[in-house]
Image 1 (spheres, protein in one colour):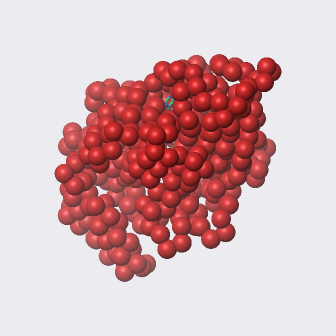
Image 2: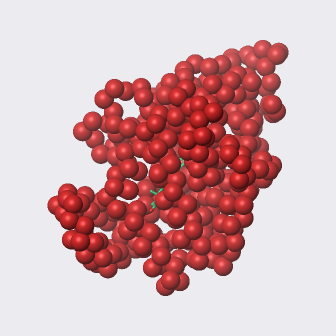
Image 3: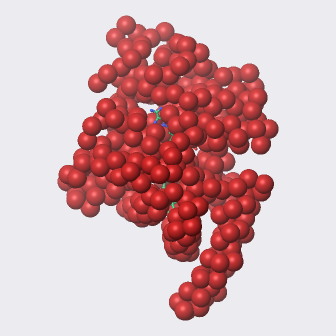
Length: 387
Ligand SMILES: C=C(CC[C@@H](C)[C@H]1CC[C@H]2C3=CC[C@H]4[C@H](C)[C@@H](O)CC[C@]4(C)[C@H]3CC[C@]12C)C(C)C
Ligand SMILES: C[S@@+](CC[C@H](N)C(=O)[O-])C[C@H]1O[C@@H](n2cnc3c(N)ncnc32)[C@H](O)[C@@H]1O
């Protein structure tokens, strides 16, 4: 609520001041003092705090440095030791979860902007599309692979009436998801659990459907997470995923493209980036039938680009404002030392994501829909799949 007021106030201020940078600077300084406490502290009766999630405050800086060191310096390197991917992704979400909730909201993904609709409405529609594709209804059991703090889970369970179990590698996110589920009264339908989506604590053939929103990109091997999803789905069950991919416009021999993708990988805890073709192939290797493959980022000729929400945060100086807030909080010991480094990484990645979107080389929402065959063929791998 407080964030909505602040966003509108800054949008107005930006339009009003136009090119008058002095007025904007004075306004900005005043806004830091006057609105800062409103922005960072109350969120209804909830309060935003910038913590290191499950990492103790005095370890945040070191954990961030270790995270940064895990990425190779060579172009296209990604995470050097892929066996450490799960652990690094867990660290990444300890470091960013509070900043995401504070500066973005409870759904950790992008969406195209629908004409005449707010970002919040566009986000909910993007989530509900999956409920429709998966034909979710009351009584159905659905799995959310990489559920974050449960924004999509709450939308999908409440629009469809289905029961949604979410899995996240990060214990702090389970705590946050439980907190929000209870606050919103959806805890009967939404169950977050901590676990690795490469070794899920669920029985074979236990879910009617499954979805993943901008999450399976964290797997060291895509075919392994798809293999696990194949295992826990009932025969005939559908799985839908918004995948982070390099599009057909990506050229691995273009250094600019490679740089954009490297920065996206580093700022988002990804081991590497796959092409949409590799993602399609990974599903087939895992024994799933490909039902649909379409890039939602470019599918509609009337929806606005997904990256405009980030672009607007940069243009309206909200991100600069946030950097100042994080700096002040760290100086006052209200945020752990090292939070500025985490925030700086996010500021950089905001630009890379916009560059990836505007050049068309990257999409965070290539929709893949797969079906588990009613009776898997002998040549298809039913359980754990390794490339
Ligand atoms: C799917 C993933 C996350 C997608 C997005 C939810 C996040 C990607 C980049 C994030 C952000 C960048 C800039 C931040 C800004 C500097 C800060 O002041 C406020 C939060 C940001 C806007 C933040 C919000 C979430 C993202 C948009 C990945 C991880 C696979
Ligand atoms: C960008 S967030 C998206 C969260 C959620 N789908 C949403 O849209 O709000 C990615 C999620 O994937 C989860 N994740 C990444 N690797 C995982 C793994 N190996 N096992 C379980 N969850 C994982 C993260 O913990 C995080 O919750």
